[in-house]
Image (cartoon, rainbow, N blue to C red; front, side, top):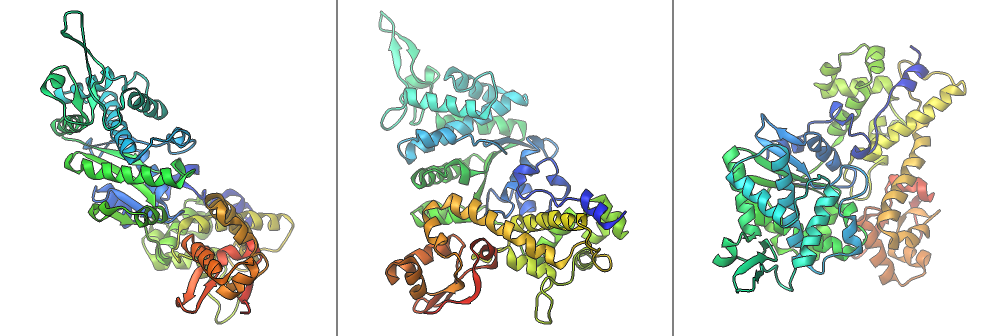
Length: 497
């Protein structure tokens, strides 16, 4: 098979887990973070955008149902792809954190009730939970996440008082109790209310936990895409996420119930900076971190998933993936040694890493995979025009990656910075064609603002990963990573002060 034929048949996969959930498990890297999550040691998973949080979520979501010899039930609280379940909250959000907190609790109880019903968890406690939720018209016959959340919201809107849901009793003509206006309350029920079937949320959480204890199973409630769910307003995002984490802490006493929350680290930083004193109590957490070896392993897993490459190189896939040095050796049989040639120039893989990292200096797989995928498309077109094959076993030319980088750069700028931080767009646009390294004085001139305001904007761009801050607070400079340079046509060097 010729090099063009091989290249035509291979793939590096998609950039996001949502786009490739069907194939993800075949080349997923079982990192230490995955092992901690899979063993139940971690509940909260932080990571930068593109770091692989959604890949972990998707792999757990694929196992929706029973895990580990039927010891664990998993249930999704958010769609893996498509519209977010919480989209309606952005148009008519709950008034405050307390109301959102109550919504989270009822939503989680509803998911547990559906899971009991779906997987045949039948005992006295599970039947009680299901009965109370059905009586409150929260648990319906159909299973759909959007419908579950709507039922919870309708219940809250019908029965919510200023401070709590109160279980009211209606009387017949003789003055005897004849009906209940609320089946679930957030305070402690009186004995009269309890006898009428009214339960507090705390009662129901304990009931669910006892049902799981009797069966000898745990339940994991999976939550991802929270950056999308509440992106329209920062106030709602802060209220919703702080409430979620408070509910997570409230549930710690229920040892059989574990929310598994996947959240971008920059969003966590934002909500804690605004004030969240309970943050120190969240200890079962991990941060996703990548280095050159783990990212090389990502690339090689995706590359060697293609049988055509394995046959072309005559290698044993498992043998290569078990040895990082073998992975490096095989990588350079397919790719050139360097992209920019020279004694002091980096190796090809290091060049790829430097060009796909933002100002936070945290490596992530997403842009690296995008670069490789785009390079494949460009190389194929070059083969189709009749260019000669690269020397030796190499399938890719050096120039292919330089030509691929602008697409990666533009996608990152538009889909991340412009999309998520529209207030920064005008300042970024003004930098087009400028030098890659700027100073407060030069930015003041470019943006036509006072130095103090230029410094404020620049520091904001540091926060979102566009700039890397160098120097010190008295004499700082702001350096643009290679990732963003092609999209804004930035040139190497420093601006004049």
